[in-house]
Length: 403
Image (cartoon, rainbow, N blue to C red; front, side, top):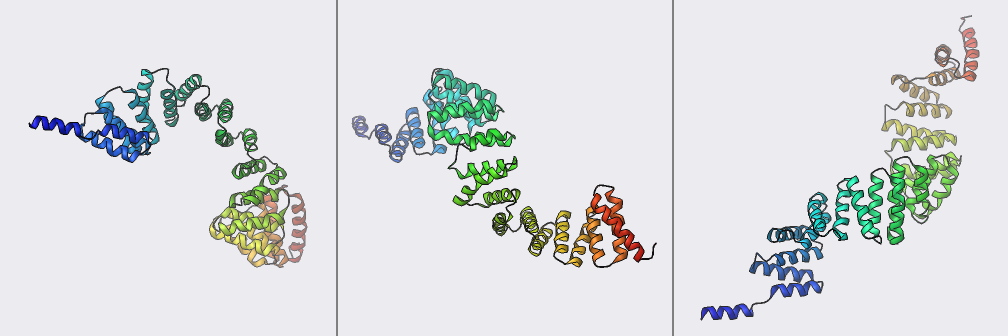
């Protein structure tokens, strides 16, 4: 009686596996997880239930939960190809490519003519920086499926990262031809060219993206760095107009300065300083631009701010001294030169600037000493200034009664 009743109850029990498969077919991963979890509770040794539970988790992008289910599947059914492949994909999604490699190799050995194990193995090798092996695997994948944009892209990436950037280019382009969305990956190659100083190749790629502000910004910067300031302006002006950022505004400002368009550069640099007031180099750039516009008091403000950011920067004190003296503030200018002296960074130019300033202040003895220091330091390097210094030395010596 109990046995018959038990059989009847078992016959009437819900078929959790069938329910789970229906849920998977309908794309209802939550319902599938619930059904397969119940199936496993009923029979923990059912490898298919574990596999399908892993699949349900994979469909829900829950790779962390899928991985132990696929591993359990392989524990119950060693060598199951589908479990090896799905486990590998989940490990790749979970950023653990090293753990995926042995499963992918095993799957590939089982089905050597299948594309997926080869492609995913190549991907795992690339992500673990085993570039030589990755290139071989991607070449095999491309041979197996010439229409795979993913494989072409992977081969290009592996070649580029292994230092074969020129050889990589055709594969990036083949991937883009097969799948237009992959065209943007060429920017990745451009960045590698740029990082290795291969600027013409990088520029050629950046020019292919006229509607990409980032690419045009890089093009403008590279043009500037290769002495093509006018072309840099042409590239950067529409970028700044469309998508202004501190970086592209400053890049454009540098181009304007090189082309002597200081009035255009000044407001851009001012915005940069406002957004990054603690940027020493930016303060110096702004100060020099204002100095070259002969706006000496505001230039002095920028150089003074720079000295506060880096008190040991002799160049900042030098620039400050020069603009203060030009702004008819000789005493403050001499004080800035004293800072340069204290830093042990005086050059012939500092001695000359000190000398002519002291001369104007009619501090004859100090001016004479500074002129002589300049002449001793210059040694025919600055002939025009040396001529003036010698004439002033004669005048000052007469005034001081030394002749």
